Length: 206
Picture 1 (cartoon, rainbow, N blue to C red):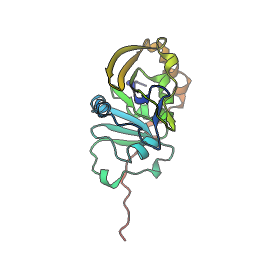
Picture 2: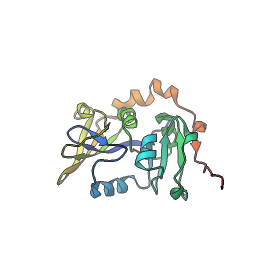
Picture 3: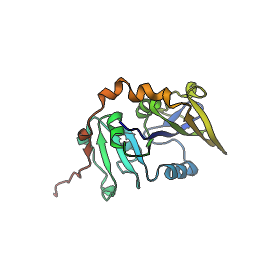
Picture 4: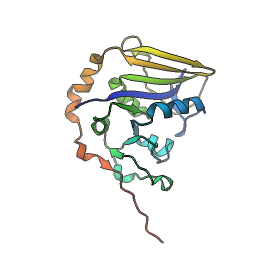
């Protein structure tokens, strides 16, 4: 299976790795939003069901291929205000099935949430992180990654701003990810025809 470059993109509290609270990001940083839009536009994005339903409120990200991971794709639908959506939206049962969907892409972005980040971390080529200063309460956390810096990932850029900074890390060697990419887990790949395309659910008129 051909693999695109896998990029984890996330904003997290520097001190405790908080990424969410009650389904929402616990800060408002316009520069981070603009950076996210700029980096991901035109590419595929992979997300979990909570990111889809709570953060995005069932509205696909525009100008991107949206792949949503859920064990029950038949239960999910697009919000009424977002039905006019021109690009691909797929619901798939696993991360591996999601990667099968985007094997024709050069790059794919993992956009959350915590479980999907944790599954993708051993596969990631790039970490694009926004580290937010200060104390934040939350109920969703980015997986522990600090122990990988310097051994599996090296910092390639850092951009400082008041209250936050952008840091980009690239995997030092592709071979450190090969066991996860091409090992036993590949045998559990879900066939592409298991993926569920979005079909509008029409409500009967009363």
